Length: 262
Image (tube, rainbow, N blue to C red; front, side, top):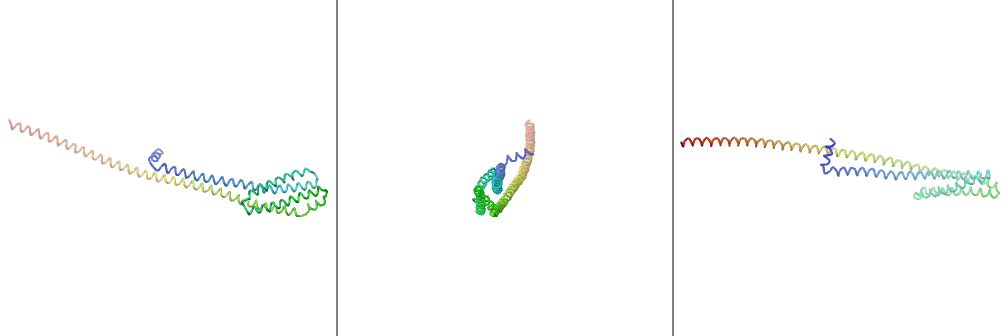
């Protein structure tokens, strides 16, 4: 059966073009889905980096504040190391986020506000330590006990949560895009497969009809050939019989004439 199907495909002038067209369609669907999925996955990866930088910025602000207070309470320079490291990390996170939100005016504005709050908080931390180092612990304590720094940290926290929520929305949208792309690819492949099977079925049915027609034509031709051959044999037998009859008649006539002459 498989050999019969292959032989029919080989005989058809449309088999190879149709097979090539179906293969190209499947390749196109697969490649398009792959490209869209990889682009979305890259975007999701970048969104993950954005979330890390937002969370890292808030965490480093807390580390900077903790290091500053530890230094003021203990007067140990060891607390200045996490403070300095936090400053470098805060600067790197802000620079990364500014590039990330450069094409997003709404959230770029939120990030500008974030930078102002961060700069204000860091200035407050720096000023408090400067006053403390100048031998004015009471002034430093007064600055430390004000609610300005607390309000700034709360504002930074609120903005961070807003940016994180926005990134979460984009992540959900990106995952939905991937699922939709995979679903469309699945539907496309299934549809092309179904169309290919339908085309194969219709082709085989048409081929069977053509083969049946050809078989019937051959049968009719063979029947006609057999009839003609039988007719030829019958006529040949008649002609042979007639020739023998004529030959017998001529011989009888010669014998009669011979007797009459004697």
